[in-house]
Every structure is written in C-alpha cells, then in structure tokens.
Figure 1 (tube, one colour):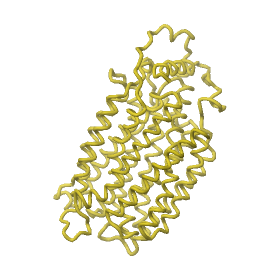
Figure 2 (tube, helix red, strand yellow):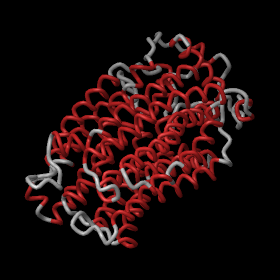
Figure 3 (tube, one colour):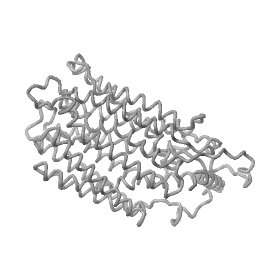
Figure 4 (cartoon, helix red, strand yellow):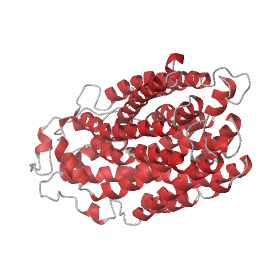
Length: 491
C-alpha cells in the first residue's frame, strides 16, 4: 500500500494472519557483521599500499580509478536496495542477495590481491586488473550491505532489542578490524610473506595474496551462517512493492537525507582516508614496518572496543541523538594529536584518542539511521529499508571521490607518486593525510549535525503525527504489522 491509498479499518482482518515466526537472535544477526567487515577492511586498509607502494602504480592513476570506484559505488547502492525491497521469495527478500553477494565478493577479493606477474609487469594491464576487481569487490560489498543493514529495523522493531543487536554488530565489526586491519601488516609481511624492506624478499605481495584467501573464506563463511539463520517478517510480503522513482523522490526531499546523510558521509570519508593511509603513515612518518602498523592498529581497535560499552551506556541514559552529537566533535578533535606523533608510543597514545571519538560515532550511527527508517515506514506505510539505506549510501559511498581527491592532492602538493618516488618529505605528506584531512571532514559533519532533529518512536513532534500526512491512513496498518511481528519475536 502507499500513503495515498485509503485502507478500511478492518482490511487487515480479512487477510489470513501470517504464521508465527521464530525470532532471529541479536547474536545470530549481529555476528554477521564480523563476516561483512573482514573482506572490506582488508580491501580498504591494504589496497592503496598493495598497488601503489608495492606494485608501483602511480598515485594519481590510482586516484582516478578510485574516483570511478566511488561513483559506481554510489550508483549501484539504490539499485540494489530497490531490487531487494521488491523481491519476494520463499527465502525472504534479503537472504538470496546476501548469499550471492558473499560468493562474488570472495572471488573478486582473492583476484584483487593475486596479481599475475605478467599483469604486474605492464602498467596498463595492472590498472585494468585493479579497476575490474576493485569495482567488482565494491559492487558485491554494496549488495551485501544494502541487504544486511536493511534487516536491523525489520528484525528488531523494539528499541531495546535493536540496541542489543547493534551492540553485537559493532562489537563483531571491531573484532574483525583487529584481524583485517590490525593483524594484516604483521601477518602479510612477517608471517605469510615478507616485507618490502627485507633484503631477501623476492615478492612482498605474496603475503597479502594468501591473506585474501584466508580472510575471504572466513568472512564469507560467517555471512552465510548469519544469512541462513535470519527469519524475515512474512507480513511484509503482502505489502505493495515500493516504486523506484516515487521512492527516490520522497527520499531526496526528506530533510534527513541532506543532514544525517551528509554527516555520515563526512564521517565515512574520514575513516576511509585513515584506512587507506595508515600503513603508509607508519612507514614514512614513524619509520616502522608491519609490526609497528599492527601494534598501532590493534591499540586503536582495542581502545574502541573498551569505549564502546561506555558509549552504549550513555546512549541508554541520554538517547542516541544527544550522544551522537557529542561524539562527533570529540572524533574531530581526536585527530589532532596524531599529527604530532613522532614515535610508536606517541602514535599509540594519539590513536587511543581517535578510538574514543570513533567508538562514540560507531555506537550511535546505525541507531540514528534506524530511527529515520522507522519514521519513513510510519509515514508512508511501506517497508523500503533497502532503497532508503542505499540512497543514504549514495552520499556515504561517494567518499570514494573524497578519498581520490585527497590522494591526488598528495601528488600535487607533496610530490608523492608511489613507493619508488615518495617525494621530498613523505613523513609530512602522511601526517597531513592521516590527521588534517579527517579533522576537517569531521569538523564539517559536526557543524551540520547541530541542525539535525532525529525522529523517534515517542517523545518528539515527528512521532506524534501517527496518521499519514496525506490523510491516506498508511501509518496505521504499518504500526499494526510492526506490533504483530513484535509479538512474534517476544518483544
């Protein structure tokens, strides 16, 4: 149904009640983020280092490909979300895409980090190989996350269980980051392969190739375990399928799209820059290798895990909106100390500052988005979490353009091209890249967040308007369906 189609008060009694659905446990759903995070963190955290510093691709060319990567990443998101929202199968709306996407991601990621010698020897072939498998990996990741993220508000309509599931998700993501970010340098350079600085290292890329296979199989296994344990809401099958252009129009005219969406894009761009450049920061600014990069990254992630429980407690006490608006400026200021670090110890201390702000935004972002999805479904009487999240993802995933611009600026302003031609002062180059750029992006996000009023189930002006604004009655049936599913879940 749509918001403009009146529904008789007794219409929902005429249809047969859906069979009771056993609840999906917050743990079974939340652990899926461990699987979704391992592949993409390996890709985002090592792709720049692998192709530019190890294989010698020009940084400006890498930036150009990454810009295309970012544009396609933004375009395919709403398409995947739209298809998912309209899908009706015996296995549910989201599960088929999770299964297919994970298998495609596995193959593309392994190929991305397994460059044949003949390809690596040709600059043109290397760029083509990188472009094909980086973009294919991105599309598979988009397909997975468009469906995985859309499940959160559907599976857990009650705020308490939703917060629990999100807590499990974020904890699982941080554990995955320890493996795919923190341990990758030492595993790839010291355990499974060798370092580029070692005198007897014939192929410094082999460790990353082996790690891509291990992390790919592990991540996909966890995604499949989660997907086959998810039980979607069968009541949604009777809903009218959301139209594409009407949905896009309603979404882009929604004020939250241009406020919360841009704030999330600033945050996502800042973290993407950090993931791309941390190994290079350690090499050129700190003069370290795989061990030092691992120590720094593990320290940051462990610090974030430790702070996550405190931020979650703050959310329960003061609400997601207030905590979100507090965490953003803390996250911005936290990037200042990393600029002045000149040793592993001072970098770790600066990294712990970053962990404080990072975990605060991590603990609140998805809760803020879920509230926006609730508000949309209540107003328009249709579940379209996939396309709505994906439309927001257009802004967030355009961070590829911002990262590409940041990378290109390293060549323009600092002369950095690759590992063979790092410019006159690569130490300062990556101080700026890892500190100044994220600070400015988060400062912009903080400023915009001051103008945001987040909708909620109760206690806000937006929530008091339970009837459809067009008078169509779409909100009523939506609320009844949610309450029915909530009862099934025992919430």
